[in-house]
Amino acid sequence: MVILIDDARWPAHDRLWAHLVSDRSLQELHDFAASNGIPRRGFDRDHYDVPEEAHARLVAAGAEHVDGHELVRRLIASGLRITARERRGR
Picture 1: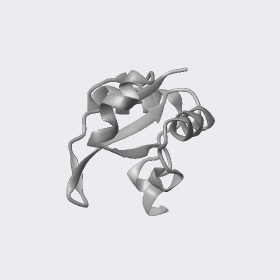
Picture 2: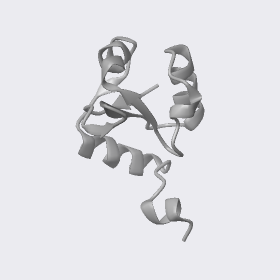
Picture 3: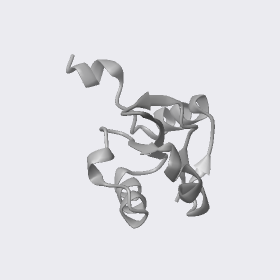
């Protein structure tokens, strides 16, 4: 199992957010998120948005910390990436 998390750099709702992804399967991602208290409403097609305050806890639980470029590269390589075009429905 390889769950990846990047730096919390994206502002929203008065906090910073990171992305949590799997480089193998969405089921693996959902299982990891559920077992670590991340609500399903945080899932956005190919990743979970997780608040900065959960970052260290998720790394301690086994998520591998990578930079944003590495996270996207590995998500694309996994075949799980949803492109911006796909998000827009085109």
